[in-house]
Amino acid sequence: MSRKIKCIIVDDEPVALDILENHLSKIDHIEVIGRCKNATEAFNMINSNTIDLIFLDINMPGISGISFAKSINKEIKIIFTTAYREYAIEGFDLHAVDYLLKPISFERILDAVNNFQQVHSPSKSEESQENKAANFIFIKIDRKMHKLDFDKIMWIESLSDYLKIETTEGTKVTRETISSIESKLPGSKFMRIHRSFIIAIDKIESYSNEEVIIQNKSIPISRSYKDQVLKILEKFQ
Image (tube, rainbow, N blue to C red; front, top):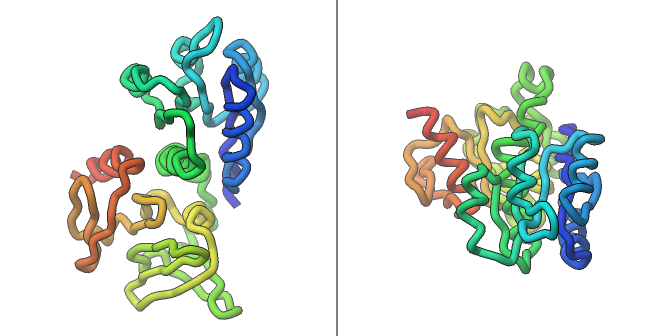
């Protein structure tokens, strides 16, 4: 199992802290280490814990979110949360993972977390040597565990409460969340391009800013994943 993404929430509004914590509690691979009402508390939190990700309000009394983000270790990634659209450009200049405008829906939070996980998740850098060597996993189909070779996967689609896995040998259907199976796949071979799609990078026949084509099928690249997807694919040019 991959370790969870350790995060903190920083906001001077108690209601905003409650909403974010409630949203994040629904995401299996996120662990909320703490909640802070100002930058000073956040400094203390990151100095005494290993933190991967911060959900950070911008307009706070004392030290602003922008000033705080400029002062911390750049290995800790930031998702800004604010009611003010005008800070967006400065936020992205700080290489923020995402910029969320309040009120923030669960779906938008999930997109932002998946955007982080695509490139920065600990699971990508701490992939087990056993999984690398084995090059397969087992998935449950009709009460039996079936071998799934990584090299045979073309794409995976999430449909309600199950997954449809398209392989070179046909379609396999299993009950599992897309985030769960994503954590088991090698990040060097697979890429999340949409809330509902994971694709095998080496099976891509062509792509644009909006889609990838595999076996003549158009698979959409969602807006929240686009920048990271295109950045990864640029490495192959």
